Amino acid sequence: MKKIILLTFVLGLTAATATAGNFGLRGGYTIDPDQFHIGGHYNVGQIFEPIRLVPNVEIGFGDNHTFWALNADFIWDIPESAFSVGAEIGMNIVSHDGNSNSDLGLSILGDYRFTEQWFGEVKLGLADSPDVKLTAGYNF
Image (cartoon, rainbow, N blue to C red; front, side):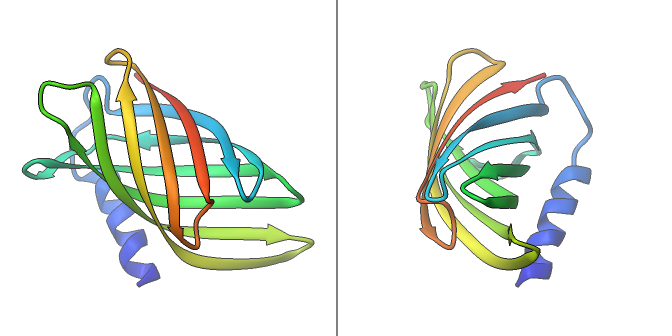
């Protein structure tokens, strides 16, 4: 299963040609573990109607851990609205005192697009993911 997620992530990064707004940066705060995170994303676009794929990579610092996340977000943009909802599946790698552990994580998400560039996002962890992740992001 870990290989499938990694393959989905890599294919997502290479499946579509780059256009304005596809790449972006993100950062924010997570709860349990209590960390600040930074990362980047790539909006592949619709993989099937009406769902779009947004793979992303994040690294979290704090709470005596380093948290790497390789995620695939599947997002539905609510018609005629700035809101979106979706689900995330990802490979989470946690390092602590020279030891590391990897798990397959699952979250649900909601986001709001303030402009075409700026967005805010909330993720709620369902399995082997941070309990809450609050993120702000910018699309180029």
